[in-house]
Image (cartoon, rainbow, N blue to C red; front, side, top):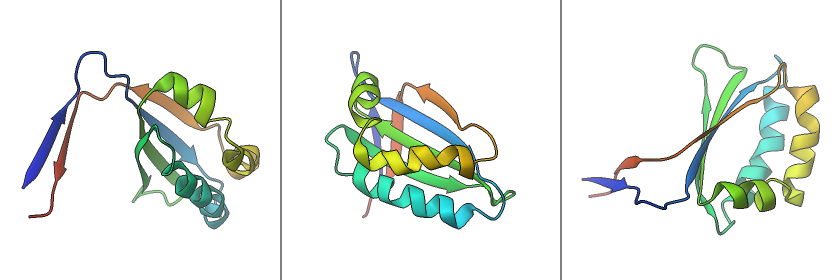
Length: 115
């Protein structure tokens, strides 16, 4: 069975896509830094979901897809959280280029559900 959702006018949810080009040989270190951040994020009230992806063609290229209830709350409250500090501080050394961040407005979501 499939489930579909369509956003309503005034919905403040945002999708954030983060591209992360990790220095070769530092992938495990990167994942060790990111994992506690992802584990903590899921408990935030404005968090909707996050999916970490890895390129099948480049094992040093990661993409993080996050959905949050509100962009202002994400920027002002979530990004400065203490659990993100070690991860954020290490990124300039672990990444081979600055991370790319784009913000999107979700319009529709389609999900498979258990039968």
